Image (cartoon, rainbow, N blue to C red; front, top):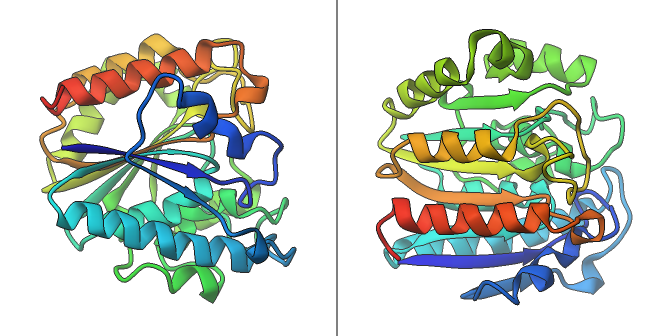
Length: 275
């Protein structure tokens, strides 16, 4: 059974509205569990809200591990992308591959980040790079060659260097535009075939703001909604064990982003055969 988990989370990005995504979706979706951060944890640190994010991601991890152990599929909604430190850690095994759909690399550490905000660090953290308070969350370190990023087109200079050093494969947006969406879909399928379990982390900002304006950090020249749905329709969900849909911000939305999320929710239910 699919379990919808709503995570009200702003501390990883500090952008107004990031924690309102679940309230916005509740008129259309029923959530099995909703997690909210304890306000007493909200202390400003460097990286920003380090303790709050670390402690909350531990709670997220434990929740996801429990849901999977009960035989369910966690479909996580949020909330800024820092929550993936917890959600991926909760589903990660040595055999897991991670498909990361995002305009950003999310491979900064507290030493390379310009913004100091942890929502730009989750993928680095999962690979064991960064502040100890974050890297100690995951029991299993995600191998860099178990990651495929698609749709990336905004990287900080040092972040790009780190990704190359670590061996993270990223299919950049300009590469997709040159070689075509169908080529990229075949690359995704080949990647997914390597692993018995897959976690998909979908950041709404991978979609162009003309099609999905309701995000925390809009990035021009992204996917269209039609392209995202084509990608998700084309891949088999048999090996997909968990998924995130993150960075939805209703304060900047005109209805398009919410509609996309609802469509993806229905698609995942259909692909898992659990409607």
